[in-house]
Image (cartoon, rainbow, N blue to C red; front, side):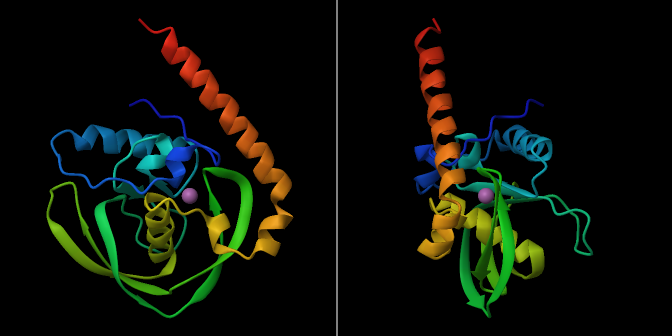
Length: 182
Ligand code: NI
């Protein structure tokens, strides 16, 4: 399966609230591609808009921890209960080389659909609970830089500017390529 390009900070799709998924008929090959893109980038989670798709869908596969290492797909998810709070350093495939301490609820109850279209409701905590919240933020157009103080954000201003310039270059290259496709 082909891995897709991961879009970076500066691309407007990362600021969009993603649309609900209603057609489940061809999702499994798309989900395979998402997993492959995530593995290639060495991430543990990836949201659809991070590969430029406006869909309320994300994948997570946590490895190398004591936690359950099942690959998971979450579609049309919603956090219905949040409890507690803890800080943990987070990185993001769309903001390379940046790590920020992010405060988030420790435990969530999450309602979502799987690939089988069935609705499920589960309690999550630990790294999986955190990853779900990070990916849900993506689907709502929210990035980790929005969850830190302006002082913390200022410290990584140079890195952010660079990522944004490169993302904009890539975007203009993409639109040029599109123009010449017949
Ligand atoms: Ni991310």
